[in-house]
Image (cartoon, rainbow, N blue to C red; front, top):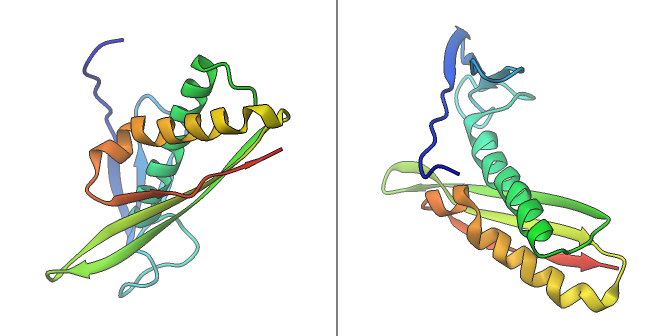
Amino acid sequence: MADQHTYQVKLNWIEDRKGILQSDVLNSKIEVVTPPEFPKGIPGLWSPEHLFVAAVNSCFMTTFLAVAENSKLEFTNLECNATGNLDRLDGKYQITEVTLHPILTISDEAMKDKALRVIEMSEKACLISNSINSKVILQAEVRI
């Protein structure tokens, strides 16, 4: 795999506080808005804040899948809830913390310690987590 990759995303403003994200290499578009917590924000649609937390969460998942495969860890289910905290520091808004709560289901109780190690390795290797200033907190759970 090459050491550098480029990802292009185009934004078109539509109206009010709404735009469309798309890429020439992707099949779907994402409608993005100002979140309702801000003036003229729109509820019920993806915001940059949601996309930020989603980027951390989805990167954790894809990294976990690769690490689990390389570690030969068998599992039956993975779900991960993520929460991002937006704070105002020094007059600027920023996501200061993202908490990941992965719940991994395995069938062999003897693999529980290995499963926790794979989860922790995955968070440490996640390129999005490694690319942001926000603190990422991992609260893993392994179920049998």
